[in-house]
Length: 257
Ligand SMILES: [Zn+2]
Image (cartoon, rainbow, N blue to C red; front, side, top):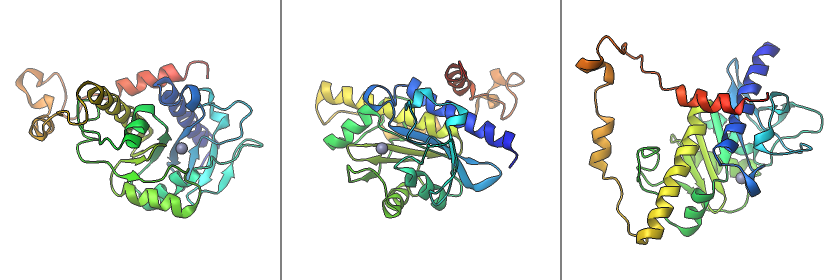
């Protein structure tokens, strides 16, 4: 891979880490907890990720040159002097090993998601954003310890299966996707559902209603907008732009880089 390509990936990953902070998923006591990663497009055996042992460590302060390159066994390939892999690098490397389709992995400690796992309260769909993520019960890794060993990483990767979310009991969550935007926004939407579930729990106790499955199916089974008469010729087939919100978050996060 040309170094300019590698720099571009590191820049995208640094921005993704900043977005996680901007969205409130790694702030305050969790400012340095978590990491976003992305596979190198021209080398699927390596990925760029936030490291550890920075003089100043927070997701919000990450720059392209702070990112490290690891292989899919979790070994350090390249990075700034003194910077090493995060302790939980096996979350990323094991998922990349088991899921060739996954291009990006995110792990953070989002407060409402963590709290609900500790309380044993299952998330159910309560608003549009992220409702698909919590439609079925989410897998939970039943340990508070961090994921350090290869076996622990494989346990989490196996729990993920072919899904996109794993909860880590009283600790955090992991999301995986086909791009940085998918994995980061899945984490943001998961936390939004968790916040809604927490509010419902406070308001009504453990047994609160949620969006019925048939109403979710009504939304997902619809024809695309460009097939409707009033959008024909206005929106081209397949031409619905959905990346605007990600570009907004990325532009905000890239300020000062
Ligand atoms: Zn963690």
